[in-house]
Length: 350
Ligand SMILES: Cc1cc2nc3c(=O)[nH]c(=O)nc-3n(C[C@H](O)[C@H](O)[C@H](O)COP(=O)(O)O)c2cc1C
Ligand SMILES: CC(C)CC(=O)C(=O)O
Image (cartoon, rainbow, N blue to C red; front, side, top):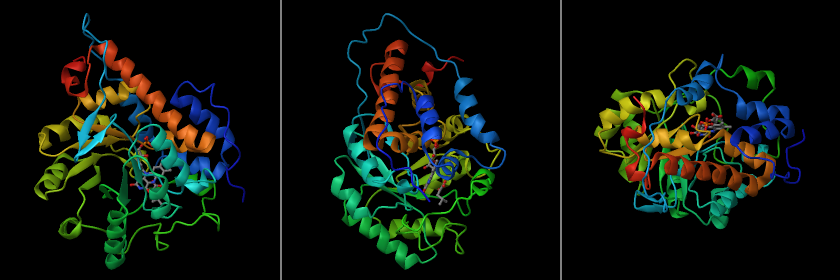
């Protein structure tokens, strides 16, 4: 089994996130590429995640003073340079030899908060040791709840600043392409905190576990994978710190709607009581603008970060974020919005 751990490619020809996916497709092992790129079943939602963004039209305003653009925001007391986070994705050493270390360095170079997956292939302390920007931790609750509690407390002690509890994966979805590509972790790639549980847990989490997690967590608890306004209302009632509107990058249940389609309904329900983050399908600065306009405070990027990592290690990760940030700046200038607060629903043509 050969890993995709060659030297970083020359990234100078990469001008957008579709270019880097194309480069990754030719560079990564088939198994690793199929693992990252595939969606659930017939990949209908995978296509919808993009189509839905493309079907939303923007409304410009002209003759605004757009000489200074400010992308800063404050989230859970953290000052973020921009509203783009690295989504939690598993098994980075499958994509690049340095794995999550390179991702953390790329996040540092691009002033990006990095949400480290429970399926990290690098220990949490080693990632913390190289991070220069905030880290968050994504939690898959293990069947062993005592182990889960220790893991959360370990992440807290290491300075991880928020907990994204993934609530949409009592089982991974139908992943035909991964099966066909013979997905299996090579021996040398170790998911340190998986306890060997990669499929469905025996004790799937419920709202009771959310209550339990909040009884001891000292960092904000976010629920990742909310797609239903009623669940969003329950999350507010449960007193969580925030939610992530996500369909898991279309990897779980095929034919659920695109996230950008459900976002405004969820935002209406939540009514600014807690922050909403957003992911699945964000590939352009205009996508970020649309997500912010429809109620998200920030967005997370999954697959493109994996492609950046595979093609260029830390530099590739940094490049992906930088491209998105440059595109967001242009989208703000061209719609006459000089800061994130000014991005409201009037940016959407209706
Ligand atoms: C290769 C890969 C691995 C992932 N692993 C995790 C994970 O370990 N935990 C999790 O909560 N979400 C995981 N996700 C979902 C991402 O956090 C995120 O929701 C999704 O990738 C966003 O969509 P995008 O890839 O279109 O940007 C993974 C996604 C991909 C592509
Ligand atoms: C091991 C997987 C369930 C990790 C994941 O969330 C994903 O591949 O989407």
